[in-house]
Length: 455
Image (tube, rainbow, N blue to C red; front, side, top):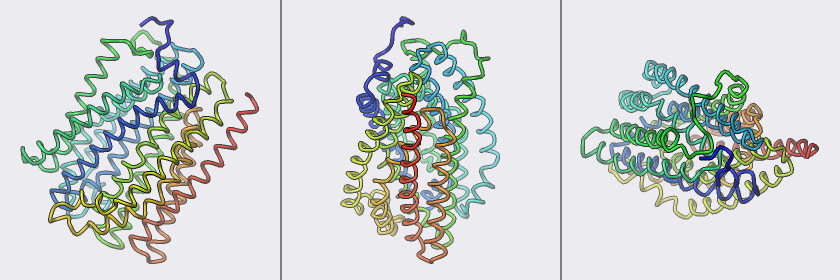
């Protein structure tokens, strides 16, 4: 494309913030819902192998979240820096940041893959996997071997989001999920691969997506950002800026991973591995339900970054308020649907004779989480404001307070100290979410008021 021309996505990104958030969010919501649908379907197929297989996936989940955290964290850093460069009219700087993000991702992927495969069994035993450890290692090591695919696709998606091109992100994420949904039953049951089939389905779909992304960036070459060997990758300012957001954002996922490990261990203490299976299934539903909110927050990072790069600070109150109100409207609808259909939703994880006894507990967990959803937008959109402006540490602090100070401690107090068991742990998660949302909103409003002095 002509270097002097803006793409449709870039024009949208630097225009009206409400229109940008809406138009950028819709494709991301569709893409992430399809991806989360795969995660649910994957759990459903694995549930057919019995509660041990489902619990094994649950014990791998914290480590898998480390990979997702690294990819999403580096992606958030790349999105923030590239969108700020675009907002400032620095296309060459955007190209440099994109190439540096890709190179960093490849190096980190190789290192992390080796470490996770080597340490998977002792880590899983430490997490309390017990008699499910062999299944967990079988599933996990295949996933860990594909680390470079998981991280690289996340960063490539982030580059497209940074230039306002969420439609193509939707296409590849959606295609990956659909292919995964098709492959899972074939590999798990028809080819008798068991739990390993679920892992291989993910890897095969990621290979196909990677090939499409490589075609767009290196053959078709119609993106605003150019991945070229001609950029000066020795310019370290972009690397520092990416890491200033990317490392704290990755740590946020590590905190969530730690929270999952901590909750799993508490559940084993107060109940059994069946309680872990309930949490694994129920939390997948929660993650599916908040996908629209996460999608909106990724758009907020791009729109905020462009506004910050262009010094349009007057857009910040609009971005913050609009994204939270939009998210709360969706969250209330999600709560109502979950409340009405908790029993029916739980059935999809308990259709086999081996897992039928989990149905009432899963339905109870989902009913409790209805209180959780409406308080998510205030926290997640506030974190995105900080990430979009390059203040990754502020976003990290918010998540430390939410996941560790509020959620983990509340779950421990109610579930262990006060003896309310697994139900106390569920309500501790809700209380932590409420407190985290309130603190996040207040902090972001204070920061925005300070920025407005320069508008």
